[in-house]
Image (cartoon, rainbow, N blue to C red):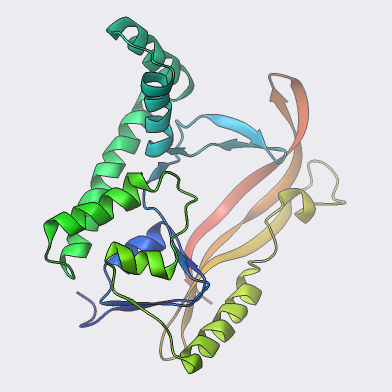
Length: 255
């Protein structure tokens, strides 16, 4: 719709949504360090289960493959049989994960498979090959953390190319620049951002999380802005010190 030809250049990783973009490209140039990944979706909304992580109460993403793995383990590994026993397994699952979240993750997977089929159909005419690629990316790879190098990506049937020496050096320089701008080598740590600040004193922050650069010099960033404040969080085991993240802006803006 927006271009006659789409080429994706991957200096390091293009996982999840990055992989989804890549499978719709006319060509995908991958360095020897580059990797794609599974496209099985995760759901994260107000109904998700919560846990205290890094001193913060956070909603935990739920993936369809994690749920399917739990059900498969109950049925195939633990040999739980019978309608009543399997119903108990499902009821136990819904006591930890809201039924609407379970419905949403399976609906999301169906949507991802449909989109992946449309994207791959632009490049591949063999429906059996398309199904094989989608099955691997959505389920057969086994884990959302699985990485696919360029050799395996080519074996899957994707249009993979190796960069020339000149292009490889250019991609490396671009990647190092993004590392610096997005602080990719500095793990996000809310506690560190408010170190030395007294409780109930908000600390402002601005964090760029993604960049899109145009050919004429314009640059747009996906930015998160807000305040962090040290607070006491009530959990099942008592009071714990946590960090309250009051998000005031999140979206794209010109940088």
